[in-house]
Amino acid sequence: MRSDWTALNDSELLAQCEVDTYRASGPGGQKRNKTSSAVRIRHLPSVLIVIAEESRSQHANRVKALKRLRQAFFLKLRESVRAEGLSSVSQRAELTSVRSSAGKLEVGRKDVRFWPAVGLVLDVLEATEARVSAAAESLGISTGALIDFLETEPKVWEQANQLRQRFGHKPLKTDR
Image (cartoon, rainbow, N blue to C red; front, side, top):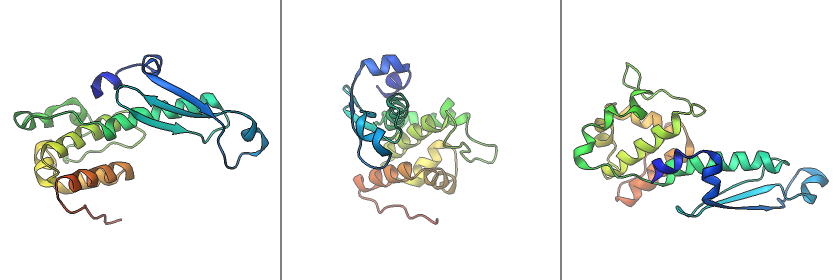
């Protein structure tokens, strides 16, 4: 399902959502208090909810909320990777396009390939019952490279630790 939703363009994705606008509280002067510029998007099929209220522009907040919804798909929704699929997961395009010759996942958070790679890494982590060494082996990278990738974004780190907790493992510790 996640791959279907992430492939949709903005208007197709919004057709599956309820969009609410409201007045956001906080700094921004009188204009912020007079306009309903904050946006809350509820994706009905997945029941994910995202908000954006930083900007005084409703349009800008809608764009940010859609971006956050796409990120939430990769962070929160898992696609199953069967045991027999684990051996071939390292050849999937989401990984081969970001894996360096040194065996690291080198992709910045602003790169469009980042979130699809995150989704696949978290899928593999779940399929291996959150065992980092088994996940790294399936991904074709070292355990250290996997930890480094998970640390690039706090939300990814948090999600990995939630998976580990669900499978009864201790949380990963950060060096940073």
